[in-house]
Image (cartoon, rainbow, N blue to C red; front, side, top):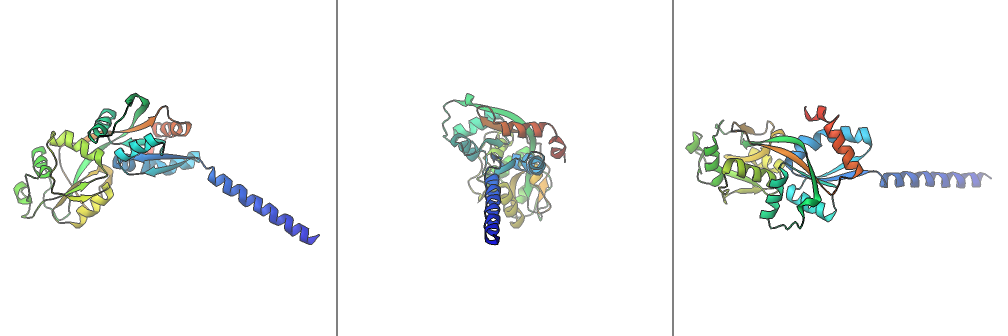
Length: 257
């Protein structure tokens, strides 16, 4: 009798564990491919409160807007988000040679806004740059900081391969179509750019406003602003709709912080 009770207890325990594992595997989640701007300005702010309020997990894949859109087309993510207008996003993909048969299949909405900041190494004495000075630096025509009233040291442009949205907006609003210099210190994400700039004398790079911290200095420049857009392929899923409703409603208090 005692042995039977032990066996029964073991079966019940195994069933409970199986139920818990099944529940975990069925946990709802939203996969979002994102660039630097939506990651810093929107999703890092609303992720925890949204998950607590709804029980739906946000899985953030921050590989840039080009990869995000490709992943959306492959069905690997539920939504893609970038610091770009929808037309600029489509134009960027066109320039990369990515063919989109029907752009009307995408549904998009603006979920936030961001300013792009120019960051430099903290030892840099330059505190302000005009649009023309920025064009000179990022085109490679200005190769020494002394030419913009700084110290006599080479300019090191840090280029992010995984922030094409940021690069595209800066190109349009500041460079006026003039190409970026080919002589760059290549990096990847906004976070990695910041690390390189912090560690490299004479370095300069681009970052979303909320990515700037005391490890680097932010230079005063003409404002470079952009909307943050979220795209779904077809109508958003019920869970994505819940996330969008949260961002428009309760999430606003977190975005304002």
